[in-house]
Image (cartoon, rainbow, N blue to C red):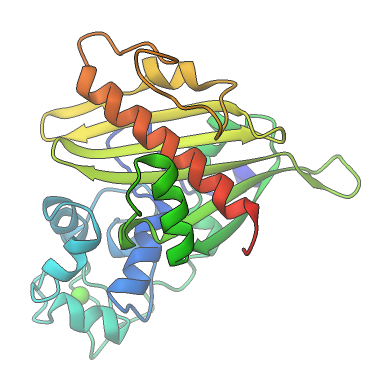
Length: 274
Ligand SMILES: [Ca+2]
């Protein structure tokens, strides 16, 4: 089975490791990186312990601005600034890789090594394999999703997304039977990570999420369970169609918004033009 052939793990729900495919896309785009890989932030690959650059990225807010904020820093202490490392194709989180001697640090990392396999298996236990597609959202996409979400266009932070499609390999020809999106949102309370999986009918089969704050991880399980069967048409309003999270009003509201954003984004990306 494809899943077992790969060693990579990215565990959104079971521990604090939480890279998101979109971070890698943002790094490539906004840090103008010649080479992007999970190894920029993680030791050993997707889901591994954060390296110096990964830790700095988290401390700087784990968002688009963080890449710029870290440009002039030498995170791994090898004498080269992060921006120079990114452009030269060396690793800002590995002192053994420098602009003069980048080394083969990213060699052998295949695109599939960056799949969040554990979480994908959680969303779609039956899927034998996944197809992956990276998207860049246009200004029109960002405006459309933002308008439906809270009336304000989304920012450049949301301009990249990766969709994962579970494939039924027993069907002839093999057929996509759903879609999943993972996203990260930087909030004042920490990094809010969500993942939604939809079936072929566009309805949620499972939704996962957690807030990673300074004091630890706060699960969105209570809310995620209520997402099953919902679609991008569902308003997902706490108090009307979703029950509030006990003692976690603010988190519940932030989570509901994040889940709704995920659903709207998937709908937008699948609707056309992409
Ligand atoms: Ca380096």
